[in-house]
Image (cartoon, rainbow, N blue to C red; front, side, top):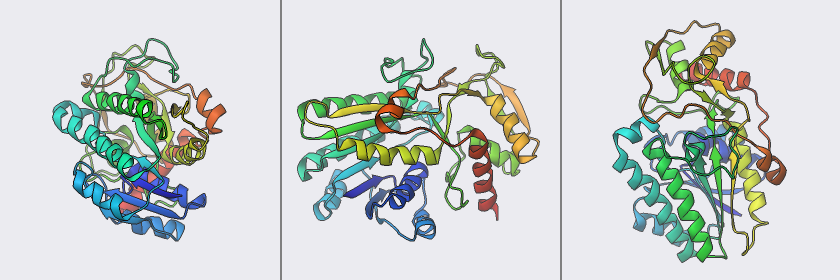
Length: 338
């Protein structure tokens, strides 16, 4: 199969390309505009695997540039990561998020129809559930009120795909709802790039430990949780990458009467912001400077996953521990400073 990974130089995209190569896929293409990534990641992929994808600098919001790629490259399946992903940034610049995250998908679907690309895997998010009434959430949990424009774009993306599959029965689509991907490759060569100041907790922690940032602000200490801080289901990025290979294999089983499916990708365990901070201090031996602040717009109080469907259908389970997540993230931070 010829696999196109959009956003392939990015955080999850680069780890997934590594996993695809390691699982025997040999013809991999990548499209990225390097807004939140670096082209040099392809060289790091080659150092790890001995292979490199065929990569292209293309903005997927530009339909003609996107069509030009498909005209000259035969693609069998797409793994679609390319999207803006910061919750706070989406609150501040909602129109940018709506345009980018929906238009990239619509352009890809247009090209899929024109150039007969049969399969797509969509990078979705647990944010589609909003603040759920019951925990853990499973794939039958209804969409909640979106707490941010970012979450809205993921709800829209899934709806677009579901409707597309209803009227295009020879195509298949899978939405993978990630919880909170963290960590880095064990080599220390690949991790989350920070072209701008990160908004995610783990990079903020590692930057604070490395004295790049002065402090961490814990946004909200009055939530209905044991320590008052938000609770999330943190999952290693390598486990996320492995799930995409499983999804590619499963996609071959979909048919015209069942051509769309959705899976949660989490660990099934919730960990609070303050618990993460204290765990990192213990693992790294670094005392972190943090302060307690007000709630942040767009944040969900508590969410964690029921993984039963992914386990039974995809034969996938998260295998890497919170300790491994934090250790690899710290190793990646140190490698960037070396």
